[in-house]
Length: 261
Image (cartoon, rainbow, N blue to C red; front, side, top):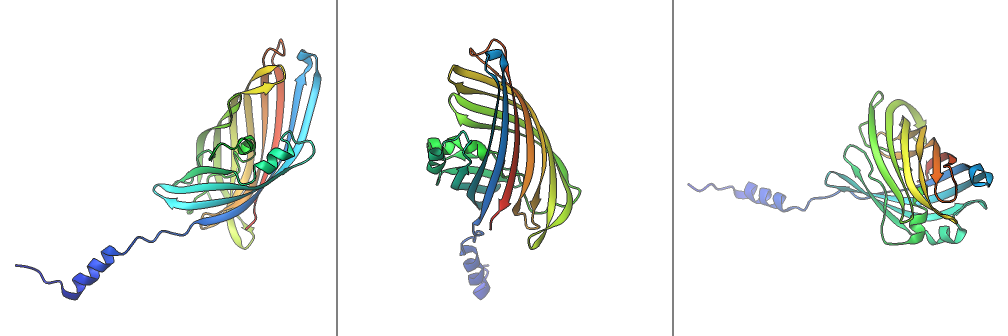
């Protein structure tokens, strides 16, 4: 016996035919300020001790889109500026403007490493300035939550490549006023191993060592990243034909991220 659905059947059919409405992309601008001090003890190579200090400021636009299993993230460089001692030439920083990177933020809140789109040499050279600027962020975090994560991130390309393997402990410590919202303050502590190669005037150099660091960042109740600040210290060794013994290198880096709007 056929079933007559009448008007309700038409409504149900129309409802099933409606397209799925996806949330609009979320776009936020950030300022990334960094200071770095590098000390090289090249005594074994007959060059004494050398110290390099410089600062950079990078403005980026981050766009997040909902996707299966999480959110896609696009990072566009709006500008990069360094002081007069920065090892990256101003022309390279200017050329990096407009460079894009992609990543994926899982449903749990973990971002994948940034990957440059295209083959812009300038964007690749400044990639290290952005490697850690976006942390683990998701809605629903609450005071007392704690977790540990391992990441492996490679920056650079070819004969100038560095891979950092990092184990980070996170703890949602407290809530604090942050602009117009009461945000969750998440503290971090990490240890890392570093390995890579770098070019020198005397040929390629092998880089290896360890590092540690700590910091804190802020997340709004609806899961928006509001910026943060952290420090890291690395004890490394450079080895190659330029020296009979490995050359000690210490690096201290401070990073501050501010949500511009």
